[in-house]
Amino acid sequence: MHHVIIGAGPAGVTAAETIRKHRGGDRITLLGDEAAPPYSRMAIPYYLEGDIAETGTYLRAAAGHYDDLGIDLRQARVGSLDAGAKILKLDGGDELAFDRLLIATGASPIRPPIEGLDLAGVQTCWTLADAREIAKRAEPGASVVLVGAGFIGSIILQALVAKGVQLTVVEMGDRMVPRMLDEAAGTMLKRWCEDKGVRVLTGTTVKAIAKPEAAKPAAPQPEPGFFARLLGRRQPEPAAPPAPVDETLKVTLDNGETMAAKLVVIAAGVRPNIGFLQASGLELGAGVSVDDHLRASAPDIYAAGDVAEARDLSSGQFDVLAIQPVAVEHGHIAALNMAGNPTPHRGSLNMNVLDTIGLVSSSFGSWMGIEGGDRGQLLDEAGWRYLRLEFDGDRLIGGQAVGLTEHVGMMRGLIQTGLRLGAWKDRLIKAPERLTEAYVATAQGIK
Image (tube, rainbow, N blue to C red; front, side):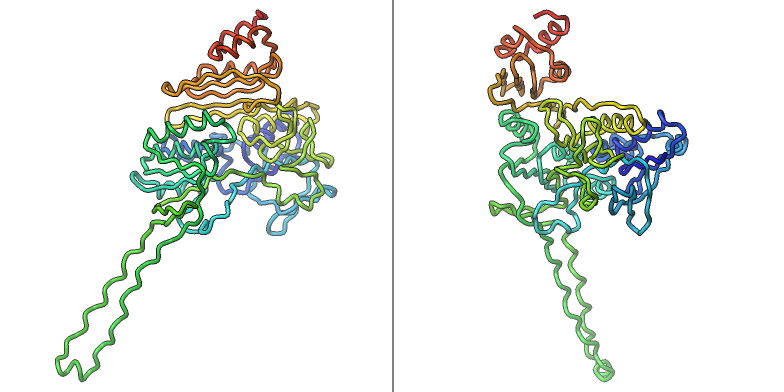
């Protein structure tokens, strides 16, 4: 049997290894569209900071890892899928047949409608190639504009600050990380960044990016003729050398302000890579629609990771959760099913943890709450502490924290297990900081 996996990120690599573990004699082909070995995008900021070498981003460090497992790792881009015929058409004209297919193509950066995105010095931060270009320009003291203060933008922010640049962040939302933190938490994070010397502009968008024009060189003067030289006329002064090209960019905001930047980093979010599937016959939503075994709508085809519209454990609905732990979980479960070991996917927990210049923020599950639900809240502006807990009945279904790392594991555990809190619910509404006590008591069956 031939298993083909499109996408050599965490989901794809995990799937290939899992299939090999359970199907020793099957053929496995892993397709990646980058020249680099399979790597983790979440490790790129550490590479930018200089904490790790480029090889430190690789998902598997051992030389010959994929060959040793009998996994055929190829660099190829898929142009289209014929789901009925079970054939992939690759860019360049080649075709690849499969018996079972995993779509793990991940996501790509969104390009906002800003004039000048294709100029040199304007860069996304999604691939190792992107990181190399950023590293060239993000020198200590360089003026850098970061467009977007979402989850990805805030990870990049940390790396840029570590490199010592003069950073301005432009976020169109009313707070930082608006899809992870509420107004109180997101505003606290903004104040923290400003306190550390980062300029943060919320409720603002970049209108255009332009390259200043280089000064034109002076027109050359004509060379004196023979008789003019014979009569001793003065030789013309040599033309002045052209002015050096200004490498800075001019960034114009929607409020009319302009600023100069050596580097502009675009972090406006990502969207699933499903464009090549439009004529495949597969059911598509925000990503590839799958069932509770991560099967797509055609036989023997599965999806995993950032491209899969799978079940969200907190809401029970199907959605795209573009985070690496979910990708790894998806890859493992999809591979078990592809290998003939039926394994249901009960849902993945929406979770995000950020370390922003030393202030840790996190959110889990339905952190925004539900209609009719109850809430406990602790806010300590001066101490940079915030804790919010969301309840459905006596179950904790979501939460977020800023500056309170000791509560993160307990919060996640209670949300993921769905344990009933009994009387502890009312105690937590009054004093959310007692979360650790509630976790221990509930786990021991003490209500």
